[in-house]
Length: 115
Image (cartoon, rainbow, N blue to C red):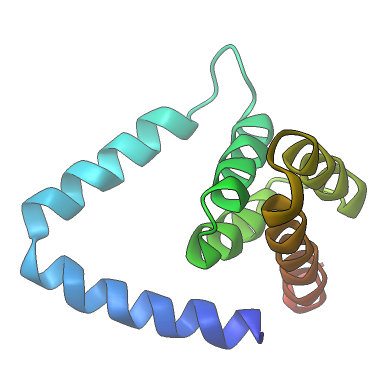
């Protein structure tokens, strides 16, 4: 999978959807902002949790967007790999398959990320 193209396509699709449901979209954006704000947990820990949930839910979009956000917050490949290991521990074979996607997304998106 080409994660950069996939996220670009997904963003285009989401943009069209947001236009059809602006109030719900604004509410979701506010929820995301509140949930990811610094608190008892740092934002990076929250993004790694979101990535784990994306893996467990078999959500390619969630994997891509939360890997990208984790990278922006300074995540390392080792942190993503440990997140995947916890997913495999808790979710077995399906988590292993989607965990491999998460690490692939990290590799592709980190190569594209500004230094």
